[in-house]
Amino acid sequence: MNYFGAMLKRNRKLAGLTQEQLAEKLNVSTVAVQNWETGKNQMRPEKLSKLSYLFNIPLETLIHEILISEKNNLKDRFPYFLFEEDTNDIVRTLHLTLSQQELFGILYIYQAEFLERKEMDSANLREDLKLIPYEFISRFGSINLLNIAEGLYHVLKYVKSDFLVKVLRLNPEKEFDLCSLPVELICDFIDNGYKMLDETDWDADYEHALYFRDINMYKALKILPELEKEPVHITDGHWANSLRDDIPLWVFTYNDKLPDYLRCRKNEIPEFHRSERIMREWNDYHSIGMLLNGISVFTDYKENERSEWILSINETGKELLEWFSENKS
Image 1 (cartoon, helix red, strand yellow):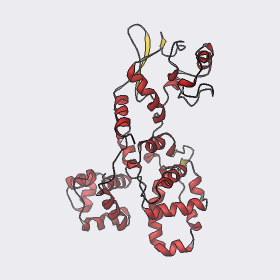
Image 2 (tube, helix red, strand yellow):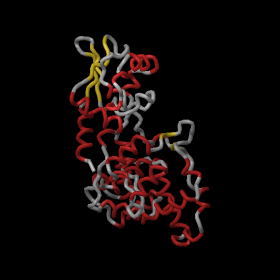
Image 3 (tube, rainbow, N blue to C red):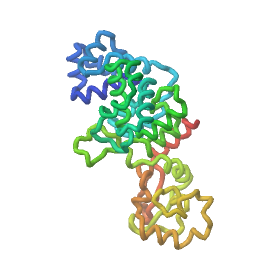
Image 4 (tube, rainbow, N blue to C red):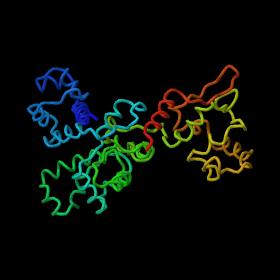
């Protein structure tokens, strides 16, 4: 995986530079910058020093990015086809060194305030660094510790602490890398593990936030295989009309906003629940939009020539099913 290229591209954009402008500052061709960002070529040492100065990034950090880019044992599993390029650029930078993970563990044990945040905002780790024991600071040196903390802060801007703890506990000696996680953890990150933008914070980084809001991987994993077998006739006449009473139960059972008696596996629902009670509650309190919530990217909801509104899997959904299949653990 091209970690260095992703890091270079992201920091170039943060600096407000085009590839042409960065090439001019480094006294290289635009093609050279393009090749660095795609991973086709690696940057020469003398250019790394200049880049370190331009972006105010420690040289050691840049070298580490190159080294982990060269590791051949990391399988990149992330479903990039689901998201915009800006989101994917951020995702590729979400990894930690063992030193950063150790610092995270210390801050977690000492209940650092920043780690309690559930949304992406403009806060930083600076105050929480006062919690770090002197023994840890002396081990790395104060300036190097600041560099370690900066890399950790970048990940914690986007990754919820509880999710990171769960991953690190599974294999504490392995460096955290979001894109090489097992498919179950990647799905968990997309559904629950990332920090949404705190829209009440005027100073939050609006231009560099993750947006997974229209996708629910758990729901997709359960519903798409059923839709691949056969589309579902949802309603008639108008897309917002009441639902038909012969809709298969699996259409409802994975929606987290449903009543408790519906929120279970389809084979555990007694037949008598397939009655007016389901349709009455759904049509009174819920909407087609809620039914499609989390799967609209993977499905089509269209009217046919008989004025029937049909829910079916689309090409993105088929690609996602293939991704699930290829990345089974």
